[in-house]
Amino acid sequence: MASPVWHFLLTFLIPLSLLNESLLLCNADPTDGFTLLPLTDANFELQKPYNIPLAERYSYVNGVHRMWVYSTDKPFKAGSPTDPRTEIRIKGYDYSSGIWQFEGSVFVPNGTSGTSIMQVHRSDGEKPATDLMLMIFDGDLKFYSGVVVESSFYNRWVRVNVIHDVDANKLTAFIDGVQKLEVDGKGPSDFYFKCGVYAQHDDSYYMESQWRDIKIYKKDG
Image (cartoon, rainbow, N blue to C red; front, side, top):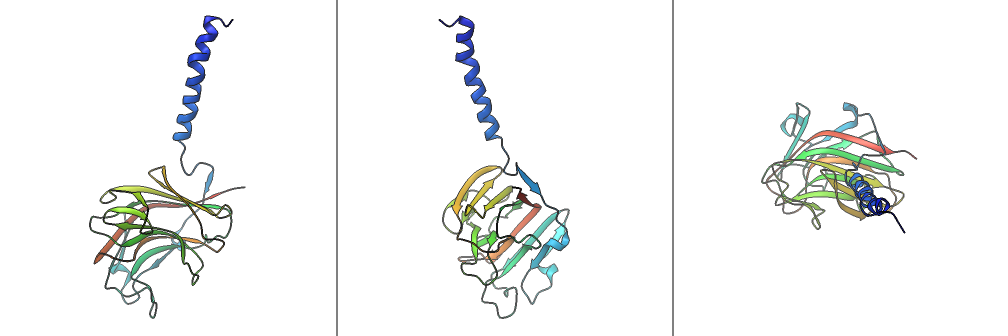
């Protein structure tokens, strides 16, 4: 027969240990196990309406990349059938295998709608062009224009993490460290990350997003 002491240990301490393990898992950060990669100005390629000076659609002040565009703007290059954009295209870290992660904090002002603010892009010219787009519609962040990833997105800084496991063909999105989305990819390609504003459908006349603390990670092994 178990002694009262052992009964106490089995009844209280073991569940407490399981609770602590659960709390540790809940407190895990999306970047745990990843290696932070160096970024310089050379890794940030700006895309904006081709006929307008960059300073009229982009600013960088106190660590914040502010990007805006109008629905009547030209595309990023003459002859392109694409919609208006002002975006950062991450250069130097295109990938076709492994596990990669984009991180950044974003602020979207009230009124911006019908625009992509972050993309996992496939090889230029390929169809489909993306494996993931996070879009703003009427204040909600959506996966493309469907599933709501986060509601009430306007007028606050939000940390966004997107993990792309190419070999497993999985993409996972986290909002403020909490997983909100996991979807299948669209198969092999060469990929890269983008963020900013890129008009889609039912877009507002004015679209803006601000980004800071942009980071790229890779998981070893």
